[in-house]
Amino acid sequence: MSQRHVDPDTLLLKMPSLRAVKAFVAAAKYQSFTRAAEALCVSQAAISRQIRELEEYLNAPLFLRAGRAVELTTAGLVFFDASQISFVNIAQAAERIRNAPTDKQVLTVSCSPAFSALWLSNHIQEFRLKNPDIKLNLITTQNFQAKEPGVEPDIVISKFASVGEGYKVYPLCHDVIYPVCSPEYLRRNPVVESLVELRNAALLDLSPYGRSGVAEHVDWSVWLAFQNIDIDERSLDSPPIFQANDYNLIINMVLSSQGVALGWNQLVGHMVDTGQLVKPVREQVTLRNSLHYLACKENNENEDACARVRDWVMSKFSWWKVQGRNA
Image (cartoon, rainbow, N blue to C red):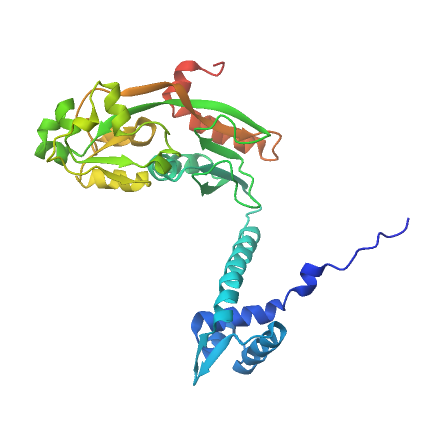
């Protein structure tokens, strides 16, 4: 059987020496050939030689020499931006591979930053104690349709019923949304126990981009409309409505008594249960036509570990407890 001929790889052939690029990145980072040599445990002469060879290869000066200090030229800035990002990616990938435990099953779990910070952080210790043989690699994202290059999550927790081929999807919960504030804010502003007065309070709102990872169509104007309250009729002396795309920021502002926000039960319910947050009114909105889901990759070499993570997460959600496995 004859060997297949391989044409020259022009991309790889055009690549400069990685050793020279490493020396360049260190010199640019520390703005000194001497400090770069110390950081890489080589001689200053080696750093100078590598950078000189790189400049000759690129046919462009990369540094302006001013005594012992160096500054990047315009070409140097362009090359540093690209090479630093590449080296960081290479180093992180190498570290993940090098430190991958041989005695543990490693699962990649993808979820929103809000779910990670407000739900997972409050429950994950229990899972880790009960499942010491499983290591969770957590990736947070707002865009579940665009996966991180080279990463194929084993578990995806999101509001999307489809996150790609090869996943089996399990419903977790409906959106149950109600206002929340701190006990201190309610003590200072008892009038917010009225829906009409709540409309005039210091309202903290998720921007449309922020809602894309939580529940797309519900903001204060929509929630109040469910209660037949028009947000446009707010008092003229009402404080401006604060908007941000970061739900963690919104909740931290609520915890520090800066206003009232809409609380998604799956994210803030435990804070209400422990008294960190209170519901100033009893009204809530349940979106029966939308669900949050857990997607589990099928035909996975870590099938047992995936099933244990899946069952543990689903055991925490009342919808699944009520509906049962055959829902």
